Length: 149
Length: 227
Image (cartoon, rainbow over all chains, first blue to last red; front, side, top):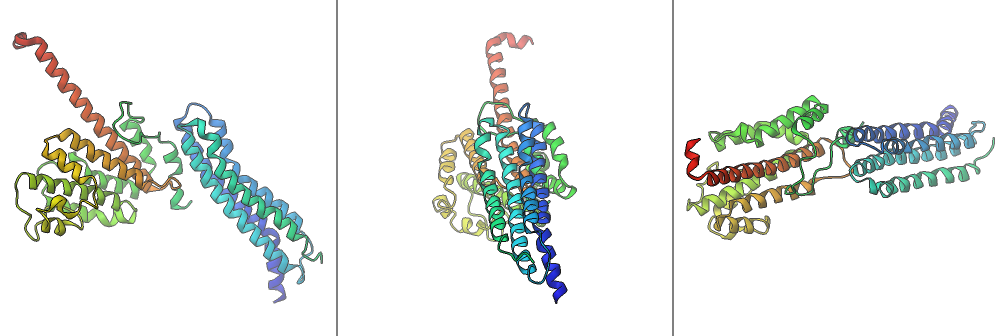
């Protein structure tokens, strides 16, 4: 039983990083494919499409920061806190990256024929990012309450 | 990648089509380029698109295909189209054709189709037959465009009727769109909308050709016989 608790603690420690990266992989792939498609139909503005498609990569960075913040000896006392905070923060980052990728794809698809709406069209992706930032910040805050040993 | 984003690159590579097909601007993508882009579809989806084309395009229908043969063809394709989530698009189109057929038949004085006769398509066939002499077959509330279609038919305005039907088709396809999805259904909706615009432009081209021919003949007058 003790070993299982320790294993879950390690999962919670590495979870934000791994889940954030998985979300970024999926989100960037979705938005990136939309950007590649849009390149075929547009004569200019290619850079901003590619730039926008990289937006869901920030969740990986948040995951790394949360992981380092949670880093401490994994014991029976620290594991429950590490698992709960780490996994929940990771899931939130994963979902925000995937859906942000979806928002970016829609923004690219809409703004390819109407460049003037580009700025406005990325607002939903920025809002989704905001929720990812909430999960990130409060994981840092609540992570401070987990015992050090 | 989930089916929801299966064709995100393909759909992003297609130019935006006008909302309604009656503008004068040229098609934003040619048939050859569209065909080339659609090669990105999986084999199964390409097959479904081919089946849809077989069911919708006049070059595969002709005048000698009976309703029974057509329905047989539809029944063979329906499970695959339903599996790929596009059957409802076809069903609503065929139901619209059936309603126009009923209007034409009634106007030409034909009696109500006999019970069990395969004369059309859709879940309302029996209802239409039973209400053959009722205004708009008792389905006017379900299909608000039907009264205008009947007026055009009565007033012998085929061009306006065709335009109304295309408008309704375009409206229905626009309603069916889901802007957060990039799947096969969205590809099919794009393809159907493209066909609609292409058809209208072809009509226009044919009308221009006819007018030009008539003007040339009028201008030549008796000299036309020399050529």
